[in-house]
Length: 340
Image (cartoon, rainbow, N blue to C red; front, side, top):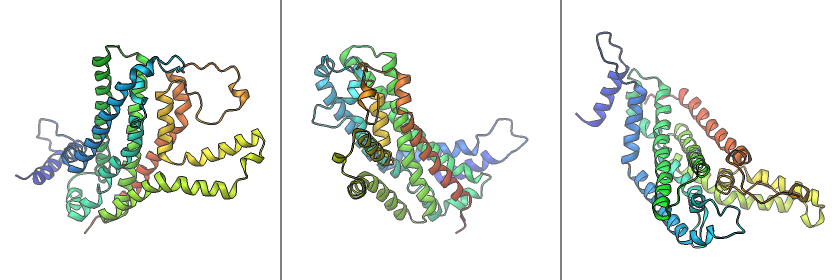
């Protein structure tokens, strides 16, 4: 029996309700999730992108370990006591930090895992066969997102635990509870960031019938926010806003706040701001501060709760964008005509 025939047979058996069957059958949702997880892990595009992320991870860790002694011995740095956070932020000038690589490669991972989630099933004729089984329509879309999220979460959690274990073996210093919580929060934030691009690509796969169209559209959106948005914003600021040299200090502060508001429409900027706050406990603000606000401030690390409060607007923005993309793709898929 082929794997495809076994999959459809499993769907039929899971969805049928037979009174004489003594054991409880697996739900159709779990069957689809297991099948999608197996397909994602075995696909060459995931293997290639996961290999790139692993390569950048080991490169960033090597550079961090090579410069960790000078980083933790700097008495002027209030974050020097956080050894394991330094492993994620120390660069040495040769390679960017690991979270910078995630900010660049994470969208590609999410796009690669979702750009053909629905339209490839419809083009291949398997979508109508799945819907012919006793399966709710929304099970398919939700299971595809859940399976991809499981794979992404497993990947990032494994890398975080590998970094903690490697640092423990090499340095022999036990990790502090606050550092462990910050690293877990950073891992969860990275999963949410990739999940946004995953949901965006799934939305495009529902909207467009051709996989090439959905892939190119998703890459075009990623390139726009990565390259062209900053250029257009600089042109708009130069043309519309006054020269900051002719403004008072309060007006300059308002001027910078307006610019930062538009900069934070970029998902990668939200991710960078939130990770900077989580991995650098001494960061107290993500925007410009006045001299009155800085008066009396002591350069000391914030607690985990206080860092989360500083980063919460960025985190909630990423979560809201992810939920909005999923809700729109859910709405379009439930109204989509799937007959060939």
